[in-house]
Length: 217
Image 1 (spheres, one colour):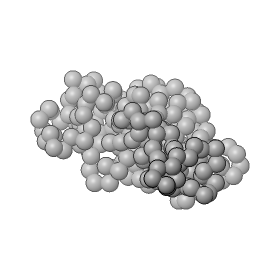
Image 2: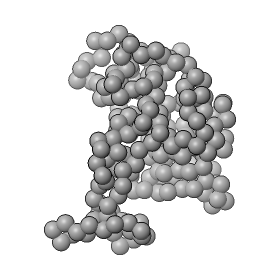
Image 3: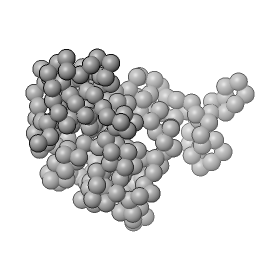
Image 4: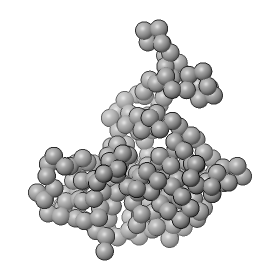
């Protein structure tokens, strides 16, 4: 049985300077209560690994606005002008990674691979400083695994032992990130008895989940 914790308690578990895998696509599938708790406690120097930084006032955008973030590794920042402004001013370091490469690097960390081979970026600035591998006459970049100190993920439901079920587009990053975080904190909408979630619907087994947030009120 997992002991459900309050969002503020979970935020206190996360030291300043931690690398955070945060689920979500433009805020959909992001653990909003946990993000709010990090802002409230005044988190600093966080390295955020995510698909994007959402928008000002939404999801990861709140962390950016509040000065909680020192570095972002994401596939795009196009809909958050505050991230762009802080990148230009040097307040935030931004590492843009093609979306497919980003999720595969996270997956590689989760399953214990030494990296992935991808043709994306060959012949561009992305290639600088990276190892090139030739397979059957075709060149690929070796992209290294990308894990995090914490994976902060949102789920539709959790059961009492931490098995997680996701809804719709929240499947995009959350299950992959749950494998790649050294400590996994899940924010479910509801917490139900074991057996309520069909085994076929469990996308993240409870053995991977370290902490559950209390259900949403």
